[in-house]
Image (cartoon, rainbow over all chains, first blue to last red; front, top):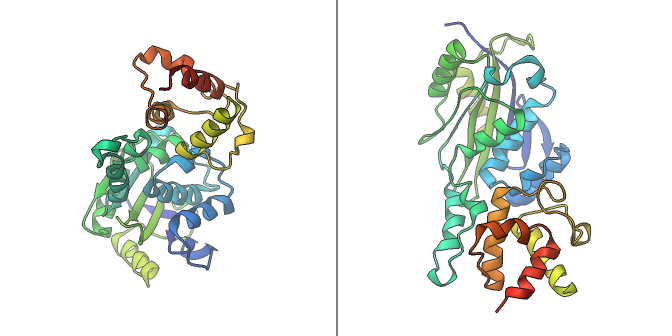
Length: 214
Length: 84
């Protein structure tokens, strides 16, 4: 199996946005997720009004992917089928499931929200990224007990070997109560287009995640 | 009718999460779907829920939806005619 390379990474955690491990944006003040993620959206001038309709998990995944792909020339270099998306999280969409439950729990005030319901599947975050970037390659969301770099490495490597030329992959977690959220997404390609020789392997993924949490 | 239109604008902004859009920016007669606010099919479902939840009006005939939800003005007309 040929090796692959990490062209770029992006992470959103706490009050920070990190690109390739370096702080790119920091609100410094601790604010609630909603306030924070809107400030990220405005700071990077994303300009995609559907963002406001997304649930929190999708907002986190979407913005991380937007910042990851800035200047990557995704559409120019690859056909829609050449790029895949593989994301993992642990809490699935529990925070949104809870919000949807609030719209149906009272039988005397029973108004299920369609706009909330559509986000009660974790793979919707992959769909939002795919629609935005016209990506039609293999895509999947895994729900795992915890971040598993070895599994991510093996699954993405298999896809890169047989089906796709580029992969957006990583970890996007939004905890049920909203008190903890973190994303770490990589852009993986067959060629080392950045000439930084950052090989896509499990030990790098693990170290990178531990550095992020430190 | 003017008050109802203003109320509807505020409710739609809140229910459909139209951030960065103010009530004054929505023209009462402008199309809600396609052009205009660029709403989608999920938004249409939310508008149906809004009518039922806030005004007690059910849309029994789905074919009516296209006319009822054409604009804020058509929604307000429909509410005026049908509310209990």
